Length: 69
Image (spheres, rainbow, N blue to C red):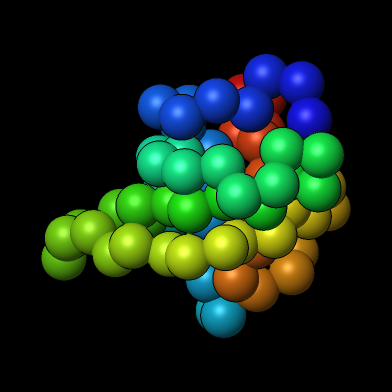
């Protein structure tokens, strides 16, 4: 997946459909887009292991590139 590197900021989708800022920490499979993330909300941060990519941005517990404003 082009552009996928540690340190990039992406969105993590929660079970409630919220999009949280997340930092790419580890890449498990660059072709599939499976990564380790540190996601952030107002209460702190949570490590997420082996998170799949979902281009639609709708699948809970997945990540996607940040939408253009």
